[in-house]
Image 1 (spheres, rainbow, N blue to C red):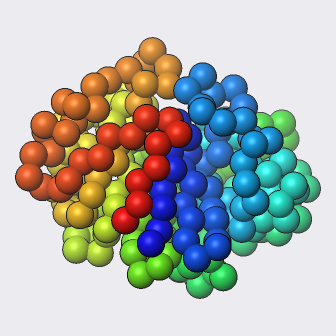
Image 2 (tube, rainbow, N blue to C red):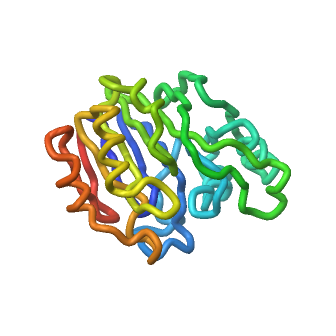
Length: 227
């Protein structure tokens, strides 16, 4: 049974069958993180939706520490390699690959792509969302994104959708609820809310807006969802 643990913002750990990956490991400097990067258990993969500092986060130090594979859009993967990540796997939108920990596909996200780190300017890239299949279940991490018609292409293919609701930089509650209606996941988990004043919002309002389209599970940092 796969297990998801939210560590605040857009950072989730997904594990199954002894394999463990992390999405967007923004822990150092994250006021809502429940755990420090040094406290994480071993990782097999590090998946990055884009290069903004609140998503790239601790990716390179974690990759070095655990010899974990960084999976990211092409240019961002090359940046991590340039910074010393020992194993990277560049991908791009629409592509999929089978890893020892599961199958990963990159999907459309509409957002900025700047790599906000020293020397990152020449590696600016497109953002992405991820479809990750582990243990026969598929998780859709939407990344930082606006509402897109492309989400309709995922209808019926997603067990758990991790959806930003914080507004200002991403979808707000109204559009996030429409995104859930497009994708029709079994479960929707809100993310990218409450970390900073500009993205303060009420996940219970999101739950009400989604209604019967999906089961909404509201996590707090450190909470786990088994599915």
